[in-house]
Image 1 (cartoon, rainbow, N blue to C red):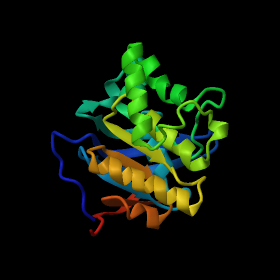
Image 2: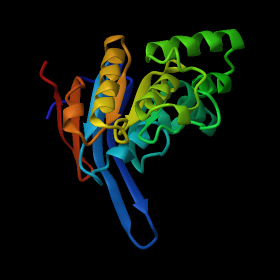
Image 3: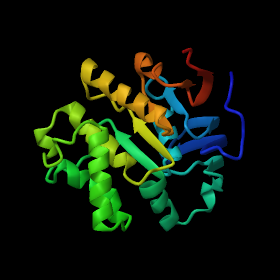
Image 4: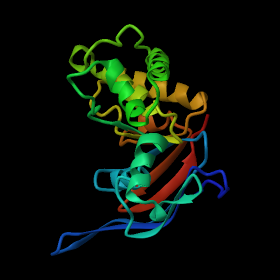
Length: 236
C-alpha cells in the first residue's frame, strides 16, 4: 500500500482515525485506524462496498462528524481544537459538498442556489452575481440560471450542486456518490466535469462504488471493513 508523502502543504492529514458508534446495546466500529493524506490539487476517489466506512470517512473529512480517536488536520490545523462556529465556517468556506441527492432548494432558481454560500459568507451583491455567473458558465449552465431545479435534468441539477460547492473557493470539494442518481451518460458528463476542475487546480475527494468512474481520478483509495486496503495512483 502506498500513501501520499506527508508534507506541510497537505490539505487533509489523518492519522489513526477511528469512529465508534455506541447504540447503548452494541458498539459499531465504522473506521479502524485510518491514515490518509491528500495534497493540494489531487483528485482522490474513495471506493468500497456498502458498509465499508467510506461515507463515515467523508463525514469526518467534511467536519460533519468527529472521530472517536485519532488526529485530523485540515490545511495544517487540528480540527479537534475548532469551536462550533469555526466548524460551521469550515463547512461553508473551506469544504464544498456535492451529494448524490443534489440537495438543492426546489423553490429557488439555479442562480439563487449557487448564491447561498456567498450570502452566508457575507459576500457583497455585485461580487456574488459575478461569482455565480462565472460558476454557472463554467459548468455549462449559463442559459439555465433562472430555472428552478424541477425544470432541470438530473445531470443539470448536479452541475448546479457542483457550482454551489465551488462558490466559496474551498480548499477541497467532497462528493458523495455524485453520479448515483444519474444515468450512465449524465454520470460520465459529471465525471468529465470533475476531471476538468482537477486540471484547473481543484482538490477533489469523491466517494463512489463505481470503479469505472473512480479510475477517472488520479488516485484510488479502497476501504473495506473500516480499513484502507489499497491506495495507489491511477495509470495514465
